[in-house]
Amino acid sequence: MMLTSARAGSLKDPEIAELFYKDDPEKLFVDLREIGHGSFGAVYFARDMRSSEVVAIKKMSYSGKQSNEKWQDIIKEVKFLQNLRHPNTIEYKGCYLREHTAWLVMEYCLGSASDLLEVHRKPLQEVEIAVITHGALQGLAYLHSHNMIHRDVKAGNVLLTEPGQVKLADFGSASIVAPANSFVGTPYWMAPEVILAMDEGQYDGKVDVWSLGITCIELAERKPPLFNMNAMSALYHIAQNESPILQSNHWSDYFRNFVDSCLQKIPQDRPTSDVLLKHVFVQRDRPQTVIMDLIQRTKDAVRELDNLQYRKMKKILFQETRNGPTAETQEEDEDLDGCVGRTGTINSVESSHSVPSMSISASSQSSSVNSLADPSDDNSEIAMMQEGDHTVTSNSSVIHLLPSNDDLYDDPYPGESEPQLPTSSSTSAAAQRRAHYRNREHFATIRTASLVTRQIQEHEQDSALRDQMSGYKRMRRQHQKQLMALENKLKAEMDEHQLRLDKELESQRNNFAAECEKVCKKQQGLLEKE
Image (cartoon, rainbow, N blue to C red; front, side, top):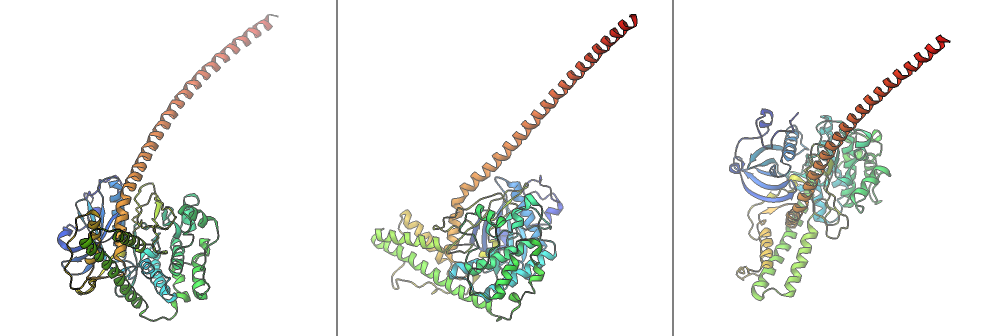
């Protein structure tokens, strides 16, 4: 059991020191490129100099406000990852410390299942959903057999690797013991018993089975049920109303039955992950290349999207160099910004649906992540206290190196020299975006460049809000502490007054008893005389 009072970054405890490598990560990992961002920090593509292996690095800072809570969250996640040994869970490769930042090194993956929805803008095929579900289910069965609970299963946390493997990732909300009772997860995917846990007791790994059922609907309909509601209304609806079902009639009975089994409202009626592994939906014969074909189609689509964005950026710069900013160019820039905003997403749904994971815990309040809301989405995001939560798709945003291909981005102005960059601020922003796309020319990925750009922008915009929320939480804890101190003081004063009153009452009772005794003796003396 770790001491929560330990100073952030302290390695005096040998048990804590063993969790981290002593090497300097900046000397071991090169070619770092930011490929994702959340409130916890950033995710980077990197290459290990020792083996030339491509890895994903999640950098998590434990300095500044709430440093001790951040440090405990890092320790918790590292300990959890160290215990994982399964083909369908993300592979942990070590953790390093540098300048108050933890470098969490993990297996390199192409992206998440939600990225597939983002790129193709349509539901997956049933056979594709079956393969992804089967892989996720195998990972869950492994966790549950070791008495662990993921607690944040959703498409954004189901990753795909280059060889076509399905991996569970993002264990920032996971519990290493079962049963558990913390309010943890992402609202629309949350099981009823998690929502009711604080009032009605505990839950076990079957909450992951419910979330997997919701994930199946997400992959089949591009969004989870109740997504048109705000998160708090959805939580109430999940806890009080009937379970959701697949809306379309074109899905097979096997798929429908699988989803219905996962979404049994009463946990005792819901099958375990082991039982579901035998379900015909995930056991049916299917081509071996389903995932590989899906990945290749997605890579091709992403390359086309990035090429389109790059050509637009280059055209804007070229026109501004020759003619200066025109109304038409500015309009086109605005259209492009809209396009960039609409293509970025972590949690699928239309073009982007961002839902932070959340939890309520006495020991830890960490910021939620994945704040990539669609501009057209009227659902307000919620930010709540979180138990060790780092609910970004963590390493879902890693990318795949390809051989150099200078012709990947076609030059829309062949024969023309590269335009000199104007100095205006608007053009400077466009130049930065253009450089961002240009820097991806050696990559293929199932995440668009605009998604990464949007995620970084959203993170910067939300920093102030997170600071305000952190300040509010600290102020609330301080007020609660003061209130408790005042209550204790008042209680002590009340006890003191009560004690004084009891003494006065006892004294009056004694005096009254003495007076009564005197009167009785006097009356008795008078009777004897008579």
